[in-house]
Length: 83
Length: 259
Image (cartoon, rainbow over all chains, first blue to last red; front, side, top):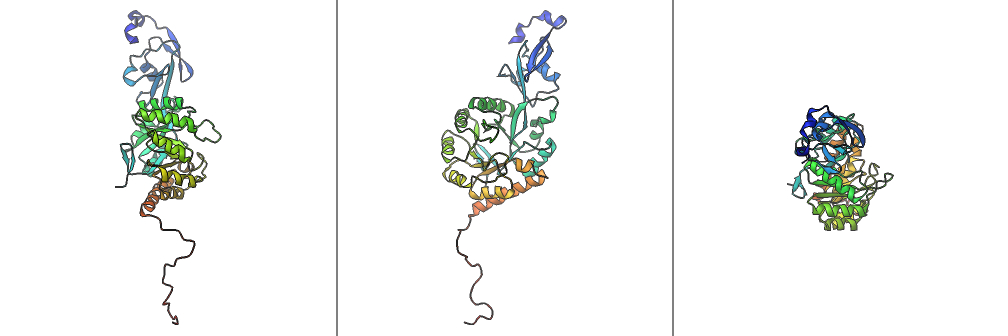
């Protein structure tokens, strides 16, 4: 898991920012943000969305420990109306 | 009881509702309730923080007895449809997938080759595959052979309201098929749903006819009743057609008749 590799001292320092791609648009986040932090940031409780990072599905239990990295491509998907 | 059987799932309603094109989510939800539908389609789309009401999973889940059937709309290849199916199953927990692969937005006709490939793989992975297809009896049989839960031939082009333009081909598909045949797309009037059911379709999938009507809830109820009426008509067995009149009243012994 990426969390285990996270250097502990970084959490104590002023956070650097990283840029990811969220649904194709650039989004700036504090370094060491988890996928669940991103969901909270955009106002989703995460219950009705599917999440992918770099084309891989990240299931709900993994979102809190999946740390986003510079340049990650994140997709957050919902069920919309369709026939 | 007369139930629609799809895989291990049974439904008392034979009307499947699409949730697209409604003027608002509340209007759509009222129509779903009025329709009595137990299987409803949804489409996987990107989250939009400016349009939170686009997220229909929560509100649809609150309607009792609803099973979701995500579609693969937006896919123009088998690979894209398979990816959409996997993500949709993660989110919905439903084994149903409407395989919908149309490369050309002008006519929205389904690609039979990509559909066949996606259906074969998804069926082998345990999905209940519901492929949207052109009214092609040969393709329908091939899809049955690879384990689809149903076939869903179009009545006419998506959203066109041209009704059962494909009736002759649909009749062949119904006759040949050992899995449920569901007319998907093109219906405009409730009477067309009734006719499809009288022909022996197992269910109808309706969206635009309800969403684009002046009163979606009332139209949903009309399609509910028409689908049921058509099913009863099919089960009862239509009488034989005749080119000659066949009197229903006695033609002799009329009042004042001279014998």
